[in-house]
Image 1 (cartoon, rainbow over the protein chains, first blue to last red):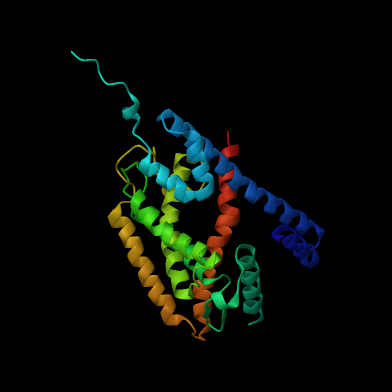
Image 2: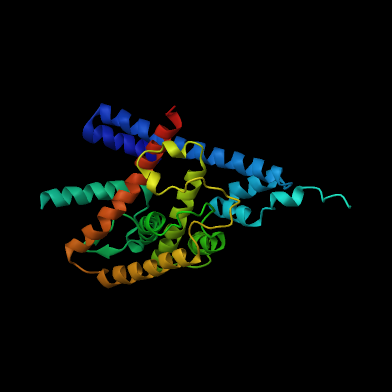
Length: 90
Length: 205
């Protein structure tokens, strides 16, 4: 709703050229944030799987809780050394 | 005077891009409503404080995240207050909205800066290099912003809250501009400038 409102306002006040500029910006900015979100989700999934944690579960938590989910993940995630096999007995 | 009125209208327009601007939830300062509601006022001003912390108080040699527990504790109150109100458990007040927004912004900014520092293209981001953490490593135990630094942020939030409360309901128009100009600058930087910088960095060879 916001995007059409903004575009119509720009066109009415400034003309068609500004309307197209506004449309471009309104599509570009959410797109950039969306791409960042996707990259973050991929990182969390891969990081969780590499630590023996459930990547899908953390993806879901990230989707629901957003940045709070990300911070909780960073706090509770296992150390990578925990996944290594214990050294053989002498 | 006409110029100032036009500027105020422009600020109002920019505020409308990000905020509902409901009068009962917006601070009245300097004879008019601020461009955004109390919660957004707190959050955006908090972001400004948080970026200042990242720039001036960050431990330069540390590569780890900002203190995560304290960051979480500062983010959660605003989320609890917002969702509690949204689901009808309580009705918040402008004071609570403002202070929880400030804490949220102060905590979010350093975390956002750190997250951007982790990106492979972060060295190519123009302008922001001084703020980014070099060789950021999430596994590093040395926090780039520890309890002390974030504590300074909390203290500054409190000071800012008291200052805003002191000038609230004032009719002195300068106070409106003192708050609105940084608010609009932060909104514009997050809506347009930051995504543009990130895009430039991603597209740079």
